[in-house]
Length: 223
Image (cartoon, rainbow, N blue to C red):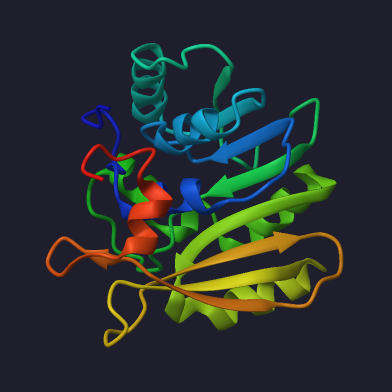
């Protein structure tokens, strides 16, 4: 896969999210902020019969995803749309929605609009993200969000404000003796109690854990 044209490069968060998301038989899947197209292609590998829609407001990301889709064994079965989530008006709802969204809250621009769109929350505020996802989910649909662990209380609050429910909250650790940087939230529109989990991934420095290798072995050649 290539990522030279998109501001958000291929990384740990997107790969983990795409491998982690669970659904028995999703007919329609939405990838919000597709970037390089990594999440969409991993989902195509996992759910070969699903219709996958990938959206991104950034032209570079759209070009990158198009290139990667065409160069993959999964060229067909993707609908790629240049749009923001706020302006997205599909004809159908989705059984499974995923996003690795921009979440940095600083106001200072990097001077690169493409990079700012990929990183800064002001381009997709958490409240607007949840509001729009709620409209797009099927009755039994699931929304998977990866977000900074230090923002957990805000995610809980904003989810409640939208009358949505977190069914699973998985705290990700690179090492158990280090603070967590990311949490994956499973969010639904139907009432649910929270199941809290932990996942230890390891990293390049200390080596990856067996559970991380098992989760990603169908996607990474190093495993």
